[in-house]
Length: 368
Ligand SMILES: O=P(O)(O)OC[C@H]1O[C@H](O[C@H]2O[C@H](CO)[C@@H](O)[C@H](O)[C@H]2O)[C@H](O)[C@@H](O)[C@@H]1O
Image 1 (cartoon, rainbow, N blue to C red):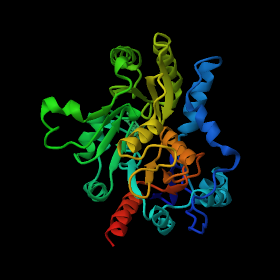
Image 2 (image 1 turned 90 degrees about the horizontal axis):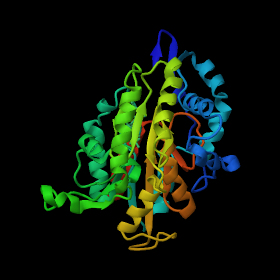
Image 3 (image 1 turned 45 degrees about the vertical axis):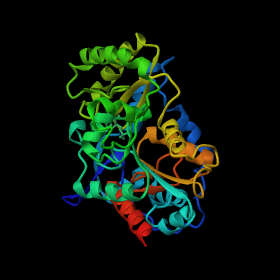
C-alpha cells in the first residue's frame, strides 16, 4: 500500500520484497535450528513472571502498525537476505506448484483450509471477516474434486455462515467440533447431530459458558476489547485495544483463568484464546479427518495410492497441523504470510489472494 511516498506496513505483516522461486527439493528443508520446538511453547506460561511474559508474547506477535519507507521496512526485518533465506526454506507454493502436483500424482489430495487470514483477510471486526464470492467459487471448485475441510478457531456455525458451502467438512473450535458434509438427510434439524463426527471437549461446555460470562464481565469495560464465544473455546480480542491497556486485558484474563485450572491459554493474531486442557488441536483434527476419510496411519496408506493432504493456514494454531504433516512426511503444509516466521510449513503464500490463485490452479490441474 502506498501513501504519500511511504509504504504503510502493518508490522504484524511486515512486507519485504518477494523473492522469486528458485528452489529445488521437495519438500523444502526444515527451518534451521528446528525452530518448531519454539512453537511448541506457544501455550502461554501461567507460572512465574506471568504478566511480563503474557505481555511480551502479546507484543511480540502483534507489533504496532507503522509507516515506513520500503528500505526502512527491509531493515526492520533484517533486510532482503533474511527474507530470501526464508523463502528458500519456504518457497512460494505458486512458484513450486508443478513440484507439488508431481508429488501428489497418484495420491488422493485432501484439502484443509484455515479461515481467518487464509480465506478472508484479517479485519478489525471479527464479525465482518467475510469471504468474497470469488474465494467461495475457488473453494467450491476444489471441493468438487477433493475432500475439503475448513479448520478454524471459530465456532463451527459461525464459520459455516461465512463459507456457506454444505459439501465441506467443518472443524470448528480449533478442531474440537468436527462435522461432515451436510446432505439432504442431515440438513433436517433432528438429523443434524448425525453429521457431527467428533466433539472431544463436550464435557467442557458448561465451564466454557461460565468462563465466557466472567470474561465479558471482566474485560467488557476495556475499550476495544471483545470476547467471542467459539463454543468449545473463547477468544479475547485486543486488536482494537490501545496498546497501553493490553496489560489490563492480560490481567483480567489471568484472573478468570485462575478459577478455571482446566482451561488453558494460547495466542493467535491479536487474540488470546482460552480452551480446554485436553490434548486436541488442529493437528489432531487433521489426523482425525484423514482417518475418517480412510487414510489413517503414519504412512497415510489407505485408499488409492495414499493421501496427499494440503493444509493452508496463517496462524500459530495452524502450526499443530503443519507439525503433523512434517511428522508423517506427507503432503504439503503452506503458511500464509508476507514475512519470515518460524514455521513447520514447507511452503508459503503471501495472502488470501494467492491462496485463491493456488486453489484455482489445483482445480485446473485436476481437470487436465
Ligand atoms: O483458525 P482461524 O479460522 O484462523 O481463526 C482464528 C481466530 O480468527 C478470528 O480472529 C482473527 O481474525 C479476525 C478477523 O479478521 C481479527 O479481527 C482478529 O484480530 C484475528 O485474531 C476469530 O475472530 C477468532 O475467534 C478465531 O479464533
